[in-house]
Image: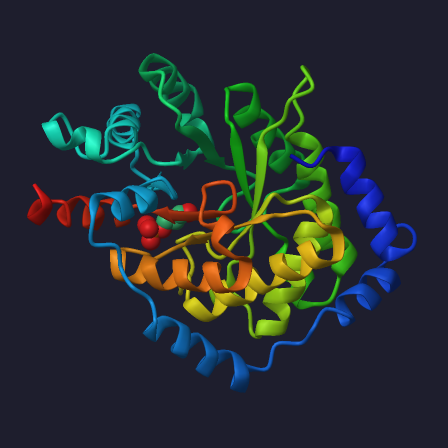
Length: 317
Ligand SMILES: O=C[C@H](O)COP(=O)(O)O
C-alpha cells in the first residue's frame, strides 16, 4: 500500500514541484489522448472475445471481485445485516455455500458503517467494509461536512472509503481543486495507529462529456493518492460503460508505467450480469495483465451482479 510520503514524493516528481494549476495542466496535457474512433472499435473487439465463466472456479473468482452494494435511500440496519450475511456466504446456507468465496467487500452509506462493522466482526470473514462518504453521490456538500462524513466512516470502522471528485471543478478546468479534495481525503483515511483505509475515487463517467476528461480526472485522482478509480455512483443518468472502464484502466496502466505503482479500477453502476462482468474482466486483463484480476486491482460495485452469479450455480449443482 502506498504511504502518504510516497504520494507526496511521487506527485512532486511528476509535477516537478507543488500541485499548481499550471503544472497540473502541463502534466495532464502529457497523458496520451483518447481518440473515440480508435477506442470504441477496440473495446467492441475486446468484448467479442470475452468468455463468461461457466464453472465454479470462474464464478468464484468473479464473486471475490464484488463490492456487494446497497445504497438505497430506505436502507435499514436489518437490510445491512442481511447484506453482510450474503457477502459472507454468497450461496446461502446450503452445501453449495463452500463453492463461492465471500465477496471482496460490502459497500454502504456512511451511516451504516457501525452496524455493518458489528456484523462483519461477528462473522469473522475476510470481507472489507466500504462506505461511500464525502457528500455522495454529488459531492456538493461543504468541505467541512465532507470531511466529517469521511472521518465518521473511518472512526466507525470502515476499511475503504469511496468519494466522488469535484466534477464541476474538473469540467471547468480547475484541476488544482480536483486534486486538492482527493489529497484531503487521502489524508483523512489515515488512522491514528498508522494504518489506513483504502481510498476509491468516483469519476461519475456517465456525466463527463469526453473520454479525455475521464482520463484527466482519473489521473488527477491517482496523483492525489487514490488506490482505485471508480466509474460511477450508480445514481447518475448512466452507470459504467465498457468504454469508460477502458479509459480508467488506461489511466491506471499509464500511472503504473510512469511511477511503478499498481493501482485499481472499480467498475460500478448497472453491472448486473456475469456476461457484462466478463467483458470488463477481458478489458482489465488486456490493459493491466493477468495479475490485475484480483480484488487488489479490480472490483465490481454492484447490487445485482451476485444474483446472476448465484443463478448460474444452479446447473452446476
Ligand atoms: O457503487 C455501486 C453502485 O451504486 C451500484 O450500482 P447498481 O445498483 O447499479 O449495481
